[in-house]
Length: 430
Image 1 (tube, one colour):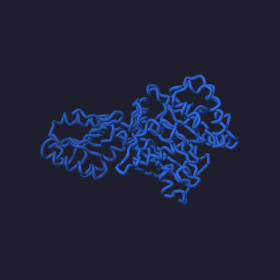
Image 2 (image 1 turned 60 degrees about the vertical axis):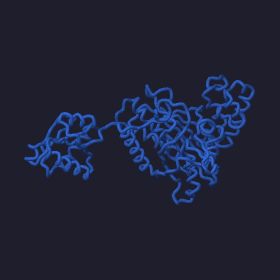
Image 3 (image 1 turned 120 degrees about the vertical axis):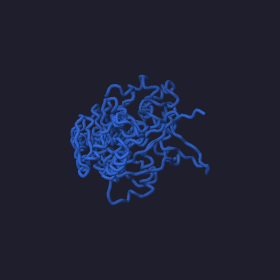
Image 4 (image 1 turned 90 degrees about the horizontal axis):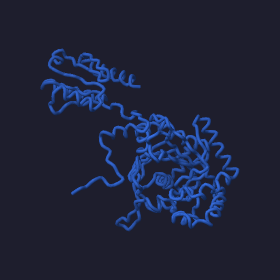
């Protein structure tokens, strides 16, 4: 039997899971600063939720969803993205009635799309996203973008590019849709089957086609910017003004089209310009979705959000040769020599853990040289050496593995001095 991990998925091994935990903690801390609260929704939902919200002309719905019939003959789908589930929960639990508006939520968990595996892109992937529902203020658009940028900047990414566009309101999009149909219809047979099917229902999706991206008609297609009514144009100008106030540089790209049907007004993507990231440079994307809450049975509640792939974030850190997420997580490795010293090592390891000092020790009765190698592999900040001499003096030897400095510490002052040494170590690493 040759059973391996399914194509498009991955095992995150202990050597890498620490990076994930550090990034996830940074995300949670950032959301707390911005006052976004976590929401956790089911991994599968009724299929109709995604066909109604994401759009039945999108690649996600047409080609990428994992859909199945359960034993009750109900059509269920593993969630391909997080916004639809979050908005469904917002409506179902009447969060529009909360006293504090907008309702500011974040989620983080696995999503599923059947697509070709590429660097940093999997069929099961972990997505972090936020949704701010209940406000049509362009200032919250800027806040949402600011939160996304903050996560990347706190993680240490330098080569970032923010691209924004306005998709306009319903009136603007209807006028643009008519112009697109008139533009593409005489030559639609030159395009792929998907584009032909989208012509009448959602011609904006044609502009996002990967197959026909080089067709000359793409470059000459009517620009949505030319069809923005005064209200939409004013809204977009305010978003840009707030981004400028927040000192967030941006580039306006009138051809930016998000891949989901529920977007309107502000749309944006954050890209990496670092070399070595590969053909796909987008790290995060999002936008405003006024009307989605109503589509799912709720009252008028405008919203905006974004989603980012944790895999892509880690890949971008690697492309920039940034080791921020690989700092040592082990404070002390306790090395013992002899039976009496081992008993003391068991005791001290437990004492450290009771005082929130991460610690490890040898359980294979290996020689001191081999134990030192283990400490190096685990990237310990310090090793604590216990032998007969140390026991006799009621002291232990603490060695800094970064600079080789050693100090003999009395057992009755051990925890305090180890904590001080760790604090000094962290400051030097910064």
